[in-house]
Length: 163
Image 1 (cartoon, one colour):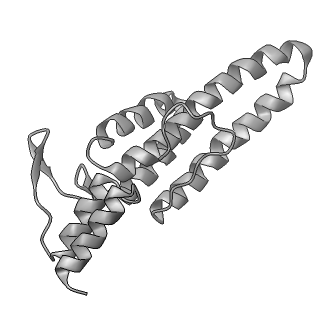
Image 2 (cartoon, one colour):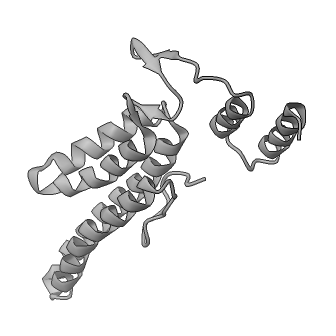
């Protein structure tokens, strides 16, 4: 297959919606055997596949795991900040972050509802179950992100697009 054929195939995939713009650009760069092009971001250089100088898989993994900091109160600030910083630099991080934020907002809603249900006792075991899921789900998502897989948190309400 010639380079022209490969580029035409990639264009068809992008037009059909099978590839995002960033995935198309990365595949095109690989097809042309080019080096990543630097583009200014926050006064530095942006390299495709990296966010803040680390690869996007590791960044996504750390973003999911940062939810475990909730005991210190940083589990609210750090994941949101990482998502806001990384979503414009990497489509992979944006997609991972959207899934994480869907779970984050859903779990807040569940916590409020289960807290109210504590008045009739049923909320206590539900809150304990939610606490376990708050540990298990981010770990699973982090492992999947490190393997470059997209994993939607079960029970998450879709506030953000998970394309």
